Length: 433
Image (cartoon, rainbow, N blue to C red; front, side, top):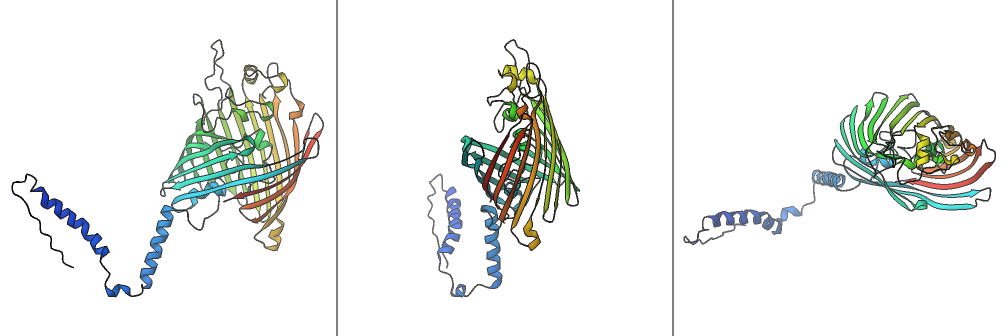
């Protein structure tokens, strides 16, 4: 189709020199639209060739990668994190949405009664901009405490396999469960006592640093905001430094460092970590005296995964300087004094019986023994509480109809050197998506 456009200009118009250019632009812009509105020639009614169909399918695939979550998601672990948290790093590009949750019910054998709850509900949102830059986040709702929280929100810069940079709200790389705390990873309905009351899982702080792989060696080294033993959360002898976590929002007047190393040797992994930092956040007494307590926490661990067998062991040791002063400032009673030393460890093993039948499902009986004391020593007027020197026995079974869903049942007994035992039955279901 040929278009003839006649443009009349008035020589007396001061804008007459601009008009031809404007008209020309209008014609150029309108031409593609007019071409699209024109009926296609009869030859376009022919069936699409295989090459054209293949090109169209490839374009649709590319757009889905850039604008939405892929239909097929690869589940795996990236840099020690759980499968759900790893999705943003494992997909080729674009938005990723995942999460996990757990519903539990417990029945005590004493007068504590029974209770049930949606224990956690978590949403992962991430975006992989390109091969160099990835954003990842974890937003958690804990119904028993009616609390919302941001458990991680960071940006990764993937410079090279041995050298990557992570900046933001990061998970502190200490122990087995702090970075991988999804319910399909650990045995039993509840997380081990050591991972709750010695290593304050889940533990996240603002900061950043380096991580990467060098052959079989994996490392992380972060500088992060320090704990706050004088913060708004309560400090309890039974949970040691758990109440000092500041998470996604808190003071950053004092800082800490943490380093983590792991090495793979055949079906086994050996590793450890060390954390150290000032937990005072610049606190001063009424007389102006600066109080600067330091937290030191180290742990070593080992894991073996061979065929249907999986076994873990961990030992953690920690100290809090000026623990007596901290307890006095927080007006704690002598038996409530925060421990100047704390320790804990456990060994556990489980065997997937369905591997013997070659099934894709798993049925894993397990047993775990823990020993811990968050108040191994006290300072000043403090008095040791023997009920906190505990031994925990947990036996149960985990069933996974698919790798992302687990149904759990267990029996646990907590005994202390003071005498007496608290025991309960637990049921739970967990999922990752």
